[in-house]
Image 1 (cartoon, rainbow, N blue to C red):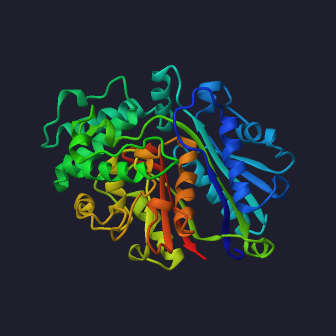
Image 2: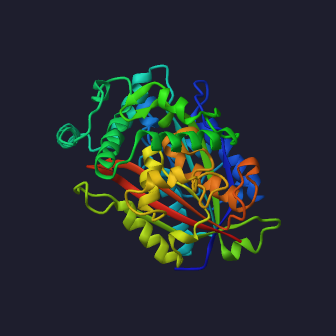
Length: 412
């Protein structure tokens, strides 16, 4: 492959519930911001990679989503490639753009993710998440998982049985969390520590959907969702868009006043059917990423990880090697993952507070890490951040993510 690849422009909308907006408007806001950030014009872009998961379900736009999203902005004639990889769609778009530049196909590309999930029909919003599973096999898999979890020596309240009124993903995460609790002694209080930390971080982030500080006690007292989760431990339903512009090393030399961030590695993997005690796909992808970047977990200064629930963050800190397996809760309790700690995790507030518009989340993570490495994060700035990591998962196959991605970025 060719020379280095750089991110030279990022942009995003605030995440939230925007019933009167549209995919086109959200995407246009993020793309325009990324072009302005890079000091480029629409005509400079040679190819675009667009991520979206649910537009077809909500508005019947099942095909040519990127073309419909971007041509109103004048992105005609260039290749526009659609990526759908559930929650990892935007990270996949970035991976494809990085790959194309490394291969020498293009010098400058746009990557964008946009999603609109909030709807007057709340149950339609919740049902949309179930399409990120093997729909045909899911009833059987759910029964198998329930049998396994019910065999654990862990008492749970009756409202934790799967039911209407929430995303099926909250139940899947709850199953994995209870397994972790039974195996390692992880506690609900540790999950609340993570959620409280992310509410503090999200309060400092003007792009966050939820900007409300909450104590550990308030987190635990919030509305139950699926044990051990309360509402404040779970990512909200919402809308938004994020974008990043990538360029080659040669193209970077043409830019004036650029604030580039180098992509050290972009690594993507696919999950598999496995037993709960077998190695996680995220571990394998992270190990490949560290090897390609010639780095280790100890070299990371700041990380954005996929925390659709607070257990997601706990698990990923273990998967990424930030602490030993089974000690993610202890790491959080130590304060290491807070702003000012040894390794701040999710300074944006994470999916729990920044929000989780499925097709946009991977690039929102990139936006945060680029902002951190540039030293432009304001009140949530991580001191002396030089190496940043994003981990973004998508969908489920059995007991693990269907898609796992890790990006490692470096300050120039």
